Image 1 (cartoon, rainbow, N blue to C red):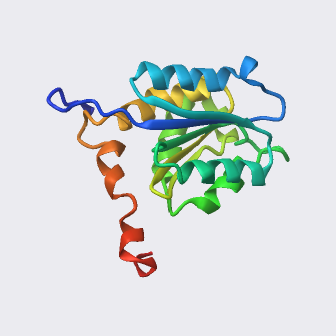
Image 2 (image 1 turned 30 degrees about the horizontal axis):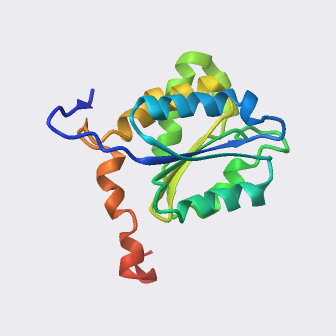
Length: 184
């Protein structure tokens, strides 16, 4: 199992949290609160927070705007990953991905399976990179947010985590843009 390298400094990153819901407000957004608490407890910066309804255009517009903000390194969404007609977060955001992170979904489901069994298949959690910004699309339950943060994101967003982590590759996420469109 990997661990934290004690000789490396902690590097805080800017993280935006988007709750996708037709009914939640900041006053009752337990999943968003769960993520915010974990982000700040870990020493990262909460760069922004918003709630938008289950609407593809509004979800995409908010996340795309955040990916163009230099203060935001990571976007975490919660909600809209199920199978009902209003669950459209993956459809809204996957077209933005320049690179998909299949392993995120796989590890998330492995962690989730240990807690909720086969019910994990009812989530379409996903992840990717757009505009040199990591994007993680989580289910809307506080438990799923805890599982994703505690089991994956906390370590991967910690520069001290060895043998590798997301923070150390952040400066190189836009290499394809610097080389031109032929690199895609």
